Length: 405
Image (cartoon, rainbow, N blue to C red; front, side):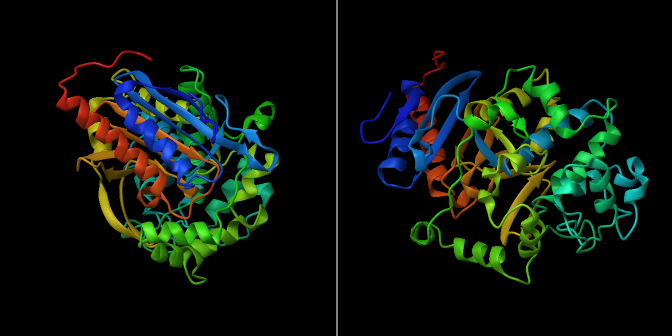
């Protein structure tokens, strides 16, 4: 398909035509100001694969079939998948003390921190006390020392404070100690997911793929006002983001070595580093498929999948300023049907989710940064609602299967 006024391409099974309509409306209503992609797997088949707009509007480069985009914190879903596999195979347990595997970690109030606390953002390791430099990011040894010097900002395990960037580096150090092959998370994901299932999905950008990545663009003040009119929760989240006394301000301070805002990832030199919490790159198609594959019986036990599908905790998060439900490194949310699903959101609007009961996984990526995050992104919410309307219509018609597109 293609649009005359706006460049839209891809495939859409007729049963999910509501999703295509929603995708087009996002552009027609100018909710999408740059480019975007949305993909949906249903019972093993790719039934929706839509993409459009600009990968780089400054030079009128269209979003194509192989355009990749930055996942931001949706990358954390990949980290959670890797640890779930490692733990399901008996190599470690969520209740293990981090210091069991990494003795040098067990100091400065970190002695009681478990792997599960790191994954659920209750470890208190929100930001670095020492200055973060790019040399730390490119050196696992230097990063290890930086983390060992950290002190929790609250008593570990008692409350939720989102670890936006430290999450990935701490887990990376744990992975290299627990994994029998001593792999980084990026390498583990490539070996166990990417290469096996031919996924165009990576933690850290390969040099040869630089030309395929969409260029990030910040939202305008006008766009943020319009989004706020759609969701009145955004001013509260914005306060927590900009509050100079808040955790997120300190997280942003950590990142000043790389740039002033999230468009810093337009810099290929930064994008090529391994930052497992934030710099995954890929297509929505592969992101949705990765989550679908993860839920297959041959990949993860039903016992662990059931555990992930229900939140371990639902708490107010003192970094983000919103209530979050979490389990084993994933974020849980209620579907439009009121049932628990899981996945992970990313700043700017990125999102990936799995609904085990309905047999679907879906992913949304955009380079036109949105003011909201997670359920507070109107473009994503419109698409998600359309998915469930389509499912309702299918049930009403009592249709049993969807042909492979």
